[in-house]
Image (tube, rainbow, N blue to C red; front, side):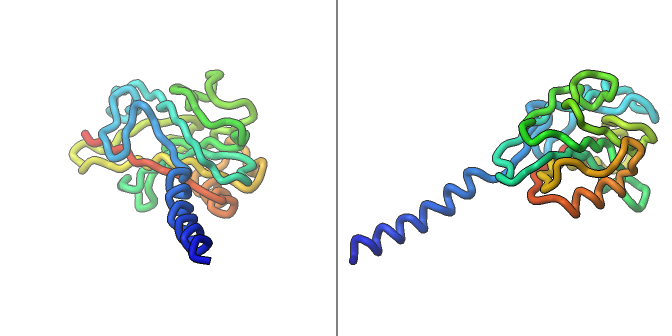
Length: 184
């Protein structure tokens, strides 16, 4: 009986460690969490002169029931009263665990087949990099991968950030984020 109790206690101690090791996460080799975003990702327009290339993103340990993924980049510090959507891409197959650098250019072949890039607050689909107003404190850019319980969202590329956000929050079974910063 004593041996059984010791085994059960050891099992309870190990299970939480396994759960933490396998948490859903997203990373980028060029943007570390809470670090400054490099010029290669900064918007090219509105007074900014960056490369406007979406960063490479990798994610792992998604919930086992994931049927599709979506990726968003959102600036909650934009002086709009509602933040700023910099990128929305959804209907990414559950087998995809990586977006290469430049996948945010809708005309390129970098985005996964069947995915949709919808309208950003720049008024066009695809990735639009950071470009906060001069003199503002550095803004936060939240990169989020959503694991979804549906194969596809019933939206087209003309969908607004708010509409995509609504569907993402209604269908998310998990999400992973990191934040980069940029100011000028």
